[in-house]
Length: 140
Image (tube, rainbow, N blue to C red):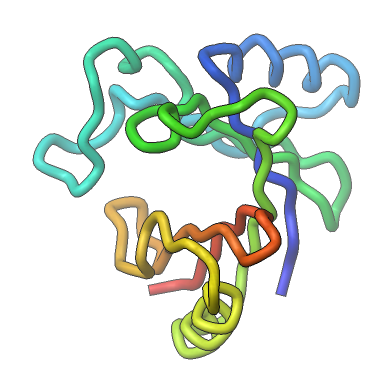
């Protein structure tokens, strides 16, 4: 099981991560724009975000990767600077993902139910009863 911090920006993700890249002298391990989403996928995006970051990963140490994206769709509607982060949890199996997801979502709000995604993960998002945002990932 690995934990990472996932930062969300209102259009400034690329600038922020280029800054962090210079600060930590590291290279991106992943970089995907909204324009890279396959047509007809489950993620419906507005044309205005096509050149914005859908997902970026900057390994800081062997055990920690800073993750990020620009807000789009429902994330954009609830975006608030200062609370624009989530805990991203990667687990080994879908069963473990379901168990943790169900426990964390008790009296919380599920924003994206666990489901297989076009990027090859079993993924879901929720806000727990204490207002902490979580992203749960497992291999398909």
